[in-house]
Amino acid sequence: MPFGGELGIRSGEIWAYRQRTTHPLQRAFILNPGHSYDASIRIRLIDNRDVAELWTARAKLPCKWAYVEDYLLKHPDVPREYPPPSEPEDRDMASYRMSFSANELRAVIHDEVSKALGVQKIAYTRTEEAIATGVSVSMIDTAVKRNELIANYAGTKPLFLADELRRWVSTLPEDPWRIIYR
Image (cartoon, rainbow, N blue to C red):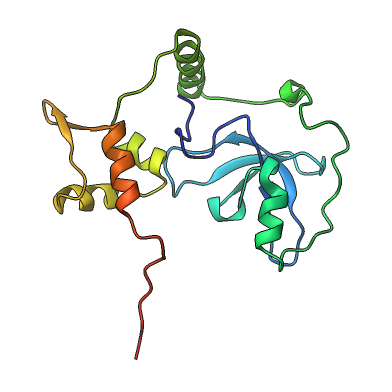
């Protein structure tokens, strides 16, 4: 599977990019979503041809571009003056020059072959699990130590079943944990 995992940002997708809180959202084509949740993401701004490529934090990509209207309804503080798409959403993104490492190309090919054969992933490594759930590897390790997340082992390598990951994510609190200082 391409970097980004089932639940994360994936290469080839179009996401909303927010440079600063005073700037409107822009369309961004994902070139490289990174290897982990905390990694920088390489993007290309679609409506700004002056910027070839840039690296950004995951926090600056609030939602997929297809869901931008829902995001704007929930966040009235975001400026609404984003440029209308100059071309249809489904335009051919192959016109952009994209560079990938050999490992990234292998991952893309593996994902496409798996999709064509109908193969679904049933177990994840620590890194893949962190990417798929959107948390850090250290948080995964902590959950395993606390017996909140159960790992199966292939020798000494921990593997996490997809159903176990869904169960664990569903047990996480709905509200963010906040430290109250008095």
